[in-house]
Amino acid sequence: MFRFPLATAFAALLALSACSKSDAPTTPAVAMPGLDYAVENSTAHGAARGMGNHTWFWTQGGGPAQIHYSTHDGRDFAWLVGQRRIFQGEWKVEQATGASGQPLTQICLRYPGVNVGGLTATWTCQPAGTFFGAMQQREGGDPLQMSGRSQALFVITQTPANLAEIEGRVAAIKGRTNY
Image 1 (tube, helix red, strand yellow):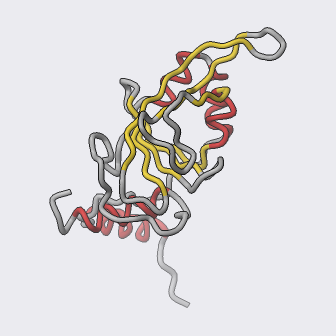
Image 2: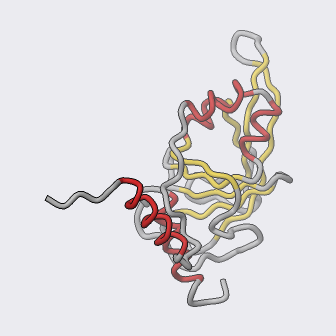
C-alpha cells in the first residue's frame, strides 16, 4: 500500500491553492457559535459592529431567502431569491425597552418604496440577539459586490445552500465580465 506523507499532501494542497485565479472563497462561511454570543450580548455598539460591513444570509421570515450586504454607514443592499433587482434600504440600531422594562437593543431595517418578499418601506425592528441568531451565515466585507448596485448578475432561482455557493457563481461570471 502506498502511503503519502501528511506533510507532502499539505504542501501539495498549498501549492495548488496558490495557483488558483478565482476570487471565489476556498472554504464555506465560518460557523457562528452563538454568533459570537449574539454579537457581544447585543449591546448597541456590538450590534452596530455585527452589522456594519458584513454580508449575511437569511432564510427566516415571510418571504424568500435573502442575501444582504450592510455597510458601516447604515445602508443595506438585499438580493432575494427569485429577483434580479438588488433592493437598497437602510439599517439602524436603536435602544428600546423590553417587556419587563429592561433596556433592549434592536436592529431595524427599511427599504423606502419597497414592499416585496418581507422587505418593507417602514422600519421593522427585532431584538438584536434574535436578529443575529436567525442569520444562517455572516461574513465580513462585500464579496458579492452588492454595494451601490441595483441589479445582480443573475436571478437566484432557489435557496442556496450557503453564501459560498453564490460567491462562487458571482466569481465565475465576474471572471468573464466587468461586473
